[in-house]
Image (cartoon, rainbow, N blue to C red; front, side):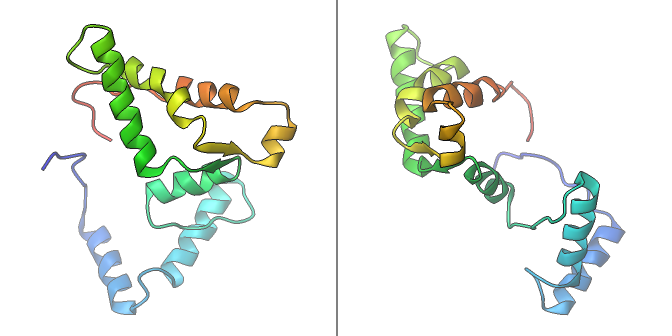
Length: 144
């Protein structure tokens, strides 16, 4: 297994987990409600909603502006087209720019703008280029 990050779990965290496990309310309950309220106050929002993972949070956040449809097949296509670009450039390895170069042709038909974004005058290619430009390329040895 490839380690992503080493968790730092102390006695206080262990006790909090045991409290939640003992409550029988793993997905809802007092602790989740407290977290949502404290997070909302911290970011200056009226409400916050806890979700099951970072991936789910990203999906929910993006759905407010875009209708996503890329999914697993889109990700596989990004990798495959990135590999094709690498081969066309005479390399037997993929670099981040290969994947970024593949983004528009692969994602263009898998993502739709919400009416609010479309009415603002932005077109899909402009939005996708903006997203790709703001995604940092991974560097060797980094952890998530």
